[in-house]
Image (cartoon, rainbow, N blue to C red):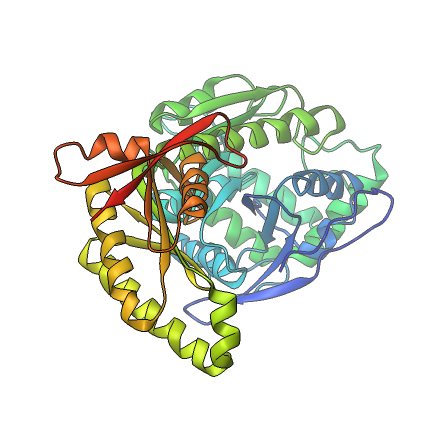
Length: 452
């Protein structure tokens, strides 16, 4: 479970490191922190070490800020940090299984992916294309591919890459400015980078991993990505300009671009606009999902009349047996009339139907079938737009159905006017029960008792 997150930046709270086990028996170190309606999986680039990561204040602040409104998972990729090391760099497919293993270990069915740095965007894009059913949204920086080609004018040539790699190996783990964007006067950042290098990978592992990411090319799968995608572009980085971001966004259907001023995301000037862009994008996507998951349905609520008194009269064991028989009857009739059981609370059922006439006939059948048990049920129906959120059905239509049920008398099937109007010509007859106020629902509602 995620830990509650302390807001004070002066307190060095480090989340507990845990291990996820992959299908090929590798162990992947991950951390789980923050709270929110959406889980964000952060896929770091290049070489990392989860616990050293928190020692640089701006990195820690960046992650804390991400966790203010979301649950965050991040991990050390295979071959780096606290995850298992291997003689040969694992394939992209194996690394994709690392993401899946972390999701499974944290009991997360669907998450947004945030890939940044060398390798992070490629892995995030590959997972999103392969597992759209587990991906809410994809947020990536433009580092999808690192090698310059005749049809890709960004990145480095092979000679440039090999010179860079040779230079990095020479100073690996030393307290010197290893990258062009490093500020030699920032002693704290230099010490952090050196420690991250030493703890994250050996020089040999770093060389092998760097070559693997340099050769990895996921450009061909970009058009197959169907999840909502945001490309995050830093205006002042070595990947400056709109070219790289436009290249990626043009190849992913419907992708959007967020261009943020600054050198890198964790800097003071860029952190807030960068994270806000991610948050706003995911919030819009979740809203769109809720809209798309709305359907017209007839909701049916039933509950046993006088359940408390009956339970007292026959005792706990007798009541338990009676409720089990009631539930068996209701479920059998829901199957017969093609209803879907959405929830069961004590002695009540909440079900949905794709047609109001079937819902009414099911309610009448339940009413008659439970009478031989010596009990009566009340029923309430309403037809309206319902929305599915995390597998649960909600919306104002559900509230109206529940309130209509509360107005029903023993053995009465009560329906809203909407239901009555939709079954005209079905042969069903109704008796007007007048205008009623429904608790928590604006206005007054005309309800009808179903006859027969």
